[in-house]
Length: 134
Figure 1 (spheres, rainbow, N blue to C red):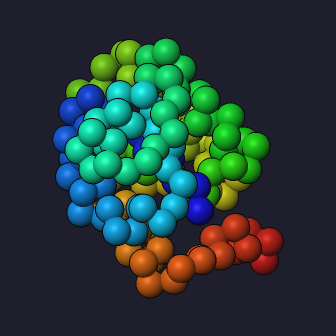
Figure 2: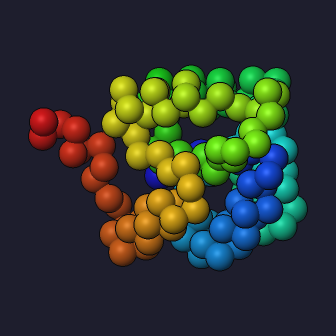
Figure 3: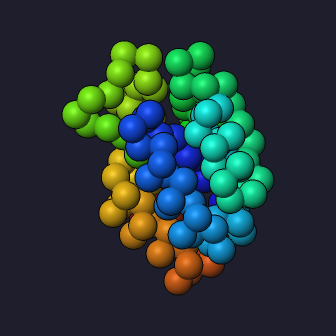
């Protein structure tokens, strides 16, 4: 499973804590992230992460293109709904792409934990197969 990890500046530490907690699950999957988030996760956890550009330089758009090309299975985008800065990644564009392509997206830590717990319980969840039923 290909998992994208993105975090607004004020949520980066929460993302690091999250990836430390779920390292045993995340290590089994292919991870990618925007530049700074990916670097911080790698430094703190040792997880292998494909890093794209930083969000302000277009890393979120690079991940968006992977979503559009059906190369991402899950997005965890910990966003700061109250004080996000203009230079930070555009959550609305990524959510739109995830909705168009039926990709699960977590925008807060609770949803992210629920999605990863489901990965732990079911090694190969058929999230993509669900959209074929409807």
